[in-house]
Picture (cartoon, rainbow, N blue to C red):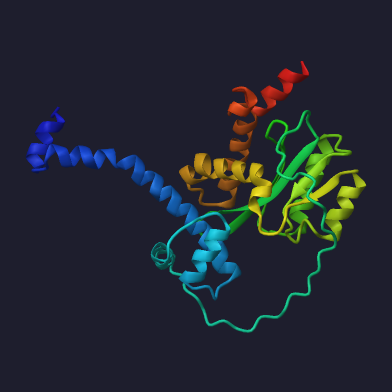
Length: 272
C-alpha cells in the first residue's frame, strides 16, 4: 500500500493542490444537484413556452424562486439543447375558473389538531426522457403526507384521484384544503368534490408561491434527499422512490417543529 504523499510524488502533484481539490468536492456535488434541479424547471418552462429565449428563461426561473443570471441560463439551455423557436400567434385561452376560493390559510401554517388545515399541490419529476406529475395532500398539523398520486398527465383527474385517496381514509368534513389557482383546483369538478365531503376550499393569491410554502418545502426535501440522488430512469423507478420516501418522511424523518419526532409518531404521541 502506498500513502497519499508517495502517490502524489509519483504523479507530480503538489499536496496543497490535492487537498484543495478534495475540499471542493462537496461544493461541486451540491452545484451539480442545483444545476439538475434548474434544468428540470427549464425543461418544464420550455415545454410550456417554447418561444422563450435565455433572457425570458431567467424571468421564468425567477418566478419559480430560482435566481440565476443570463449567462448561466444560456449555458444550461445549451447543455439541454433547447432554444427559442419562432413564436407563432397563439389562440387566446377561453378557460374561465369555475370558482376561486378566498385565501382561508393566509400563511398561518399552524393547526391544533389533525384534519384542520391541509395543503395540496403538484410537482413534476423527470426520468430523463419524459415528465411525471406528483400530487400530494399534506396535513399542516404534523406535516404528514396523507394522500398522493403519480400520473403521466397533469390534469383534473390527477387531483380528483388524490382527494379521493384522502377522503377514503379520513373524516374530512370542515377541513380547509388550500392550493394555488391552477386550472385543476379552480375546475367545477374539483369544487363539486370538495362540496360533497364538506371540505372548505382555499386558494393562494396568483403568482404567490409562499402562500403554499409547506408543501413546496416537502417537494424540495423529496427531490434533494431522494430523487436527485437516485436519478430514476423510468416511471416505475420514480413511483417506487416516491413511495419509499413518503414512508420514510411520515414514519422516520424527525422534524424540529415536531419536537424531533416524525409526523406520524408526533400525531400518535399527542393522541395517546
